[in-house]
Amino acid sequence: MFDKNYERFEKAISIILLLFMGVVVVAATLELIWLLYKDIITPPNILLGLAELFDIFGLFMMVLIAIELMSSIHMYIKNKRIHVEIIFLIGITAVIRKVVILDSNATDPMYLIGLATLLGALSAGYYLIKKNRKEISRKT
Image 1 (tube, rainbow, N blue to C red):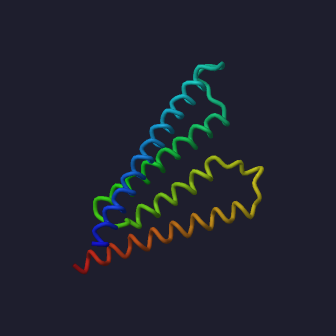
Image 2: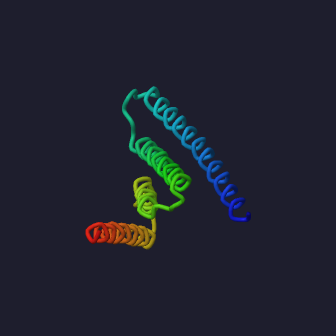
Image 3: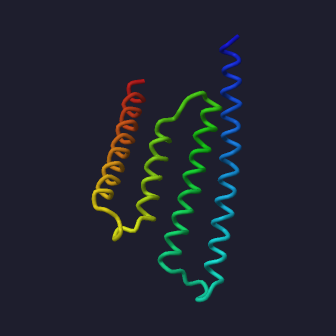
């Protein structure tokens, strides 16, 4: 009885999260469209400065991260499993987004080292998971 109610509750919360994430994706996409439109029509037309490009790339990557999170929630609802590979890819994408929008001249070098270490750790974790999956699939 409790298990059945818990599963319903868990599914309902997951669906609500998926819907909210959909709203975030739509809002961020509209923001990206507005930013592109605004940057293109302001003089000098069509030419984007470095600051505008970084804003656009940062927002674009944020939309990609949100879409990946939606995919992860959807797969959890469907399969009742958390796909660790996708979580690692989302983390890698988030760190790369941070690096893209970062002003390296105004950032503490230790912060950059920390980001590089985090990116290396996430990449190594993703590699090990993929390697383990390949070994398991070869054995079966």
